Length: 343
Image (cartoon, rainbow, N blue to C red; front, side, top):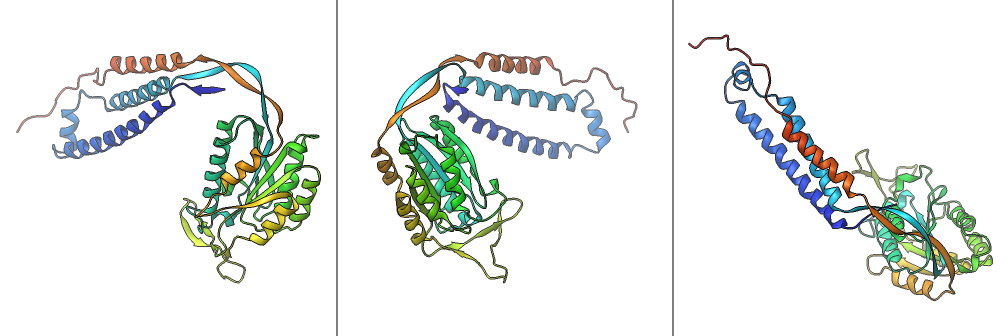
């Protein structure tokens, strides 16, 4: 496991990017000015002692040297010792709907991005609990097994996207069944499933599956993302920009709305609560209170407790880059003789 002692140093990459853009425009301007110094033969003679290939190589070396130096300044560290940590908490699986309807923009910026933001807030409020992720659309997958590493969990949440599952639809029942299988056997009393969706259930059987989970001891909460008014479903092009809206087989535009009644029934069958993520309220605080009110058990996890600095290698590579930049000459060794004449 790698961590960084001074992660704020990565902000210097933004300055490096600005410096790169400025250099690119400066070279374009210089090339344009050089083009005014006569025809190609004259310019070739004027710059006969300059090696443009080496000049470009030196620029690349300087860039990589700065990039490595910034990385070294962030203080990379490698975990070297795993220690068993005991915590009091519950196991939480969050099943996130990533079907195309989650791109609807009745909740800003869209349903999925709003859900990801609130899930990250939820993870930040946990203490001692283990967290896992399931993504589902037409099928479902265990995306992140139960873990006590909240930083890693937030990284996985940020990467969730509607393109992760090609089979479209909303197999809500299958997602619940996947969660039942993912929880440790014999510990269902300390397990909670949070289903984040807009309420569409194309396959059916979700309420029955939620009741089955409840009977095994798993508490099932439903989080509705969207509004009752609904919104059209954007269709994105290859570059990610919106090119159209989703239509049915008859060519009519599809409006996706939040199915509150289905989600309330689903949560009731699972012995949990129904909350909402919309433009006015998040429901995150309510979910945290529900989790904190559950009976806790001792969870054993392994975490890195000792780290060793690894900045030396990157700093050394940066110095080698800078030394190479200083030693490489951008002049040609061969001297070209002028064979023309002045008129």
